[in-house]
Image (cartoon, rainbow, N blue to C red; front, side, top):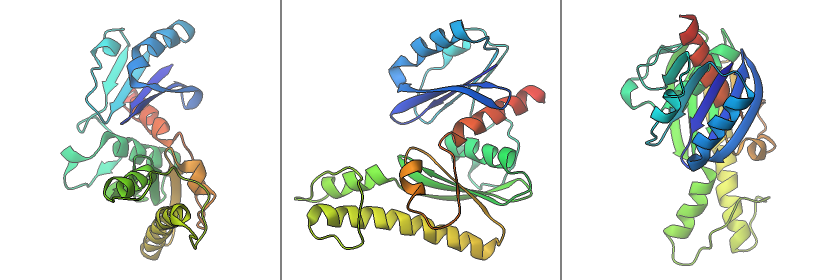
Length: 240
């Protein structure tokens, strides 16, 4: 069985896979990672492990547990796609995992993966398994914090239902931020469709469920897409 660990900016996600089947997923604080790994070891016969971290994180304690195969994902890890990104050494490991999930889950398709988390990232893989790159923009929570931080009087809000026309300060903030995000995503999807008529769009990340209901374009919503990608990289390297 495979142990997949994704260390994000604020939290960690741990998943157990049996081949391609996701058996269990946990979202925890980063500080509790070692405790949860030891508990999972008692419940599952874990033989392989991959760790992805977008922050500085010591993986030695996990490696020392003694997996048959252990990978800390980085920019030189073997992946199941052709990486045409110009600055490959600066490509985030989260985006590498999403590209891997795209080619694994949707073979021979043009795939745009939209990860709506701390940042909103756009990653594009062609039907020939070529990763071309994409875009990075501020995530929803970051936009709320920016309005509050860089102005004197605007309050710090959390995302909520919104209308086109805000009738007070709070509803105007919701409208500006959330309409802005939705129209940004719709607009970028449409630009890709203009260039690649056959396009599969996957939405993932912490704001998946909130945004999926707001988008008009046809998308596949999968909050676990990054974990799927990490598992595919682990399997790819084991089979090599």
